[in-house]
Amino acid sequence: MISETIDIAPAENIFAQGDPSHSVYIVETGEIEVWTSTHGKRARLALLGPGQLFGESGVLEARPRSATATATVRARLLKIDGAAFAAGFGLGNSTALKLFKMVCARLRSTNQQLVEVMAQSAADALPEVSQFKVTLTPDSDVLREKYGMATIMVDRLPLIISNKYGSESVPLPSTTTYVIPAFGKVELSCPHFSIEQHRNRMEIHDLGSRHGTWVNGIKYSWGGNRPTAELREGENQVTAGQSESPFRFIIAVYEMATLKGPRPDQV
Picture 1: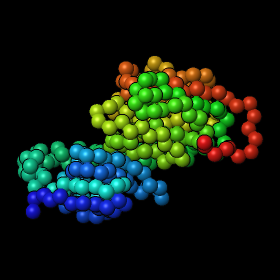
Picture 2 (picture 1 turned 90 degrees about the horizontal axis):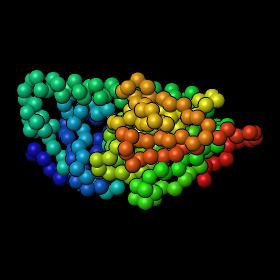
Picture 3 (picture 1 turned 45 degrees about the vertical axis):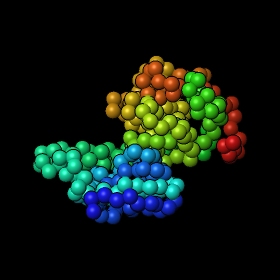
Picture 4 (picture 1 turned 60 degrees about the vertical axis):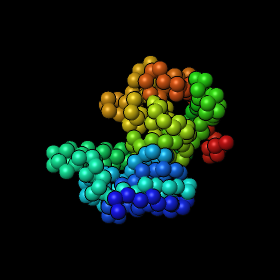
């Protein structure tokens, strides 16, 4: 059978990390989380909705699954035979297949590097007690009205700002993630940027987003070899995506005069 429709129960795995790769899947209804376990931590690679494809890398590279795919809610998938999938894209041509395999291998390598670098970044951060008061405020009508965002106090670090949907890269292991459900062709990536404390300063880290992160009028991006921006005391203008993107924030940073006892839980 070339393809078939299958129903998946909530919390059921479609495949697990290390399984053989025989099929490709398209989400018809529901939601699928693609995740991996690295250094004992669960890291989300993607949260996929209707119309999105997954499982193709393992099939094209003829390698075991590099991640686990789990339904977060009841889902219906179109399951496609791997050989039929390759043939449908004209990958019987050895040159085309070689190019596709190179792309898959590069993506796999990039994801692994991001996990390792971000895990180290989390280890270097100082999440126990913050010496700064930090607030995150929406700076566009889209964030306030469409997504219902209001000003939040940031007292657990690192804080990741992420699209609920997408598959660009790997989220940084974090105690807190602020998720915006921006489905479709939007400039907010999954994840996009993080707010972190390193020693005596606050920083923004672009996390491999598609369009970069603007901080106080300067673009920062993973691919541009300038992924980190230091936040100044007071208000900072931060934009996820191109400079005209509606995903705009004001991040205010104020140094606290005294620190006593453990940091309070986030409200």
